[in-house]
Image (cartoon, rainbow, N blue to C red; front, side):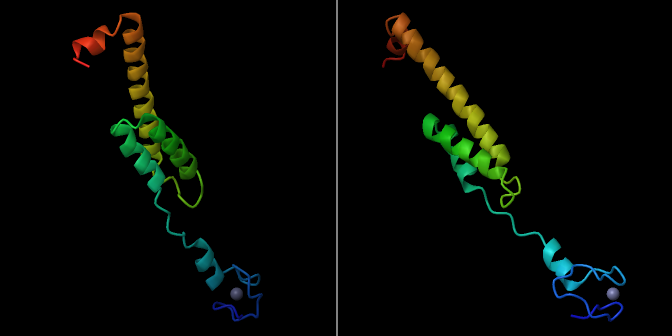
Length: 115
Ligand SMILES: [Zn+2]
């Protein structure tokens, strides 16, 4: 192809003209950011965490967080993934405390709750 600035015949794959240094059409193609993919897994993990599907939510959130670090996601869903991990850990911790209390105190808590 020919440089649009100086008209010199340059390599078709060149991103800048070696003669004058002006960016070619290849530069425009290369710098156009690919649309970031939506990190649906992270969002689903976050929603499941709110709904207290702890184990599934934790797994999906971790996968979502891993995905958010990939270039094609460009960080999308990272906040949801972290929130999903935190929420599912907290709700799991609460359940462990409840179950531990139940075991220790002969189901006093669950008994009081009418369960
Ligand atoms: Zn040129």
